[in-house]
Image (cartoon, rainbow, N blue to C red; front, side, top):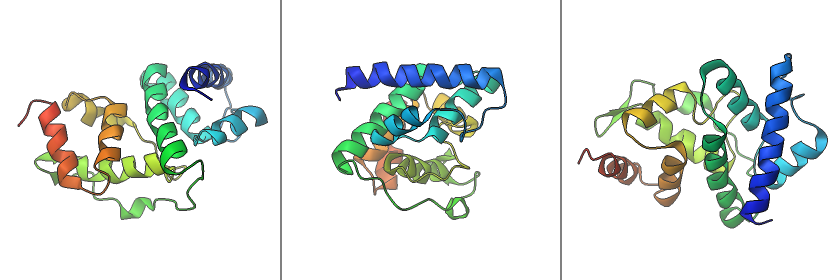
Length: 175
């Protein structure tokens, strides 16, 4: 499936999820039909990810579809090309994350955000965590970077936290 077909299909799933959420009583488990869940899984995406996007948009006004789509394009590319379409069996332990107040090269939240982004790339986020949550969005806004761009940087410098931090500073004009 080329990315244009993916975009059309993902938009349709997202719109159905948004409509279902708006009717009330939706959870990640009942938000989508079996075909939608299967489509998402084939692209390295879970119903939980879509639920998180539509829930936060409804409750906080972000992230919008364009942001969700851009994030999932990066995840999808990693899933199909790096993971060769095979999901990871690992799940990130939230207790292993640095404190929300931790800093790296003077940037708050970044030491927590990097492992979340790695887990997002690999499909290893637990259902209790969201990449591009409110705290993440605050970081992105403060450093003038969008979520998908950040995720891409993490994919490029996957094992080097300092290279990630340096790139964030460079792109935000703070170096």
